[in-house]
Amino acid sequence: MSALRQDIAELVAQDGPITLETYMTLALSHPSKGYYMTRDPFGAGGDFITAPEISQMFGELIGLWAQEAWRAAQSPSPLRLVELGPGRGTLMGDALRVARIAPEFLSALDVHLVETSPLLEARQRQTLVNAPASVSWSADVARVPDGPAIIIANEFFDALPVRHFVQTERGWSERLVGLDDSGALAFGVGEGVEPDLTVAAQEGSIIEIGAIGARIMGDIAARLVAQGGALLVIDYGYTQTALGETLQAVSRHAYVDPLEAPGEADLTTHVDFAALARAAAAAGAKVQGPVTQGAFLRQLGVVERAEALKKRATTEQRAEIDIALARLIGAGDPKRDMGELFKVIAVTHPDMPLLPGFFQ
Ligand code: SAH
Image (tube, rainbow, N blue to C red):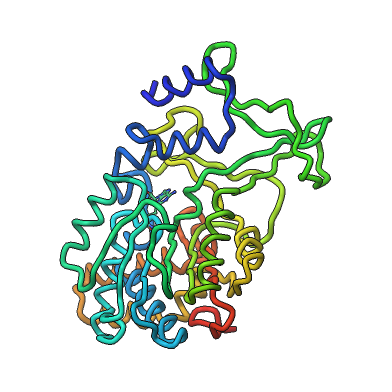
């Protein structure tokens, strides 16, 4: 049994069942035993692989996108270039490398990484040790200094805890994590009902609500409206709010039971882009997209970038570039390819014109 599973079982035995949101918060961010606090999960030898780890092309193109968004915002200086949940810092490293071709952009930059895990922060410091701009860290986006900002969030919102509600004969009740007769963690349903949830659905249906993500989105959107800039969100998810739940646990590139080993498997959900867009619009921001990651990267020139890299590559490297490109923009293998599963939106100040990647 994982050490954290033991802790959670004791907590539940003492105080009663906890919400899924609390369970996910403990599993992912418990200060000493949470998933992101104890490991670097990325890459072939880890639990999963993300776009910046697949190819340098991804971070480079996001870096070029940030330059265009900065110009579209009238080239403010200083510009806060912010990344939420930067993993190994690979995306930002690649983005800052291409910033060297735009000296005015580079000299405006003040880089902020928002990261809760001290272990991953240390990894990011290593990656960015020779960064051509000042870089600082905080655990909360609210602590990023004021001013115009370009904010990048790749596979960040999927990592935030969610709540589940189950349709019962009394109405929608919150899904809880408790103990079964054998003392194992098990899903159950609370006694209360959620009066604000009025969606009609069959008994047993589940609704997933990313309340933490919506709150973070609302706060960032309000900041962008007041101070200027844009937020780019890239994640796996869906574009219409729908019934059903998408909680998944992944360990060593395979799906596992989400209650089996808290702290040792990654827990994520598919992002409800419509809910994020509603939270942004409610704060007065404009939303561009959603578009698929495949369409977004193609419009930014990923195919041409791959061709340029291949000109200077060995035969073996050329094959690797083709494989990376297929994973980033393809959809042939829905389990592996990101082109259709991943969606992209930009949330901006109302005066921002349409940005690259979102043209029709
Ligand atoms: N963007 C990276 C990593 C994605 S994994 C990539 O594409 O490779 C999710 C990242 O978000 C990790 O760095 C994790 O530690 C961080 N994270 C999770 N919850 C967070 C929170 N509430 N605030 C800040 N960072 C968080």
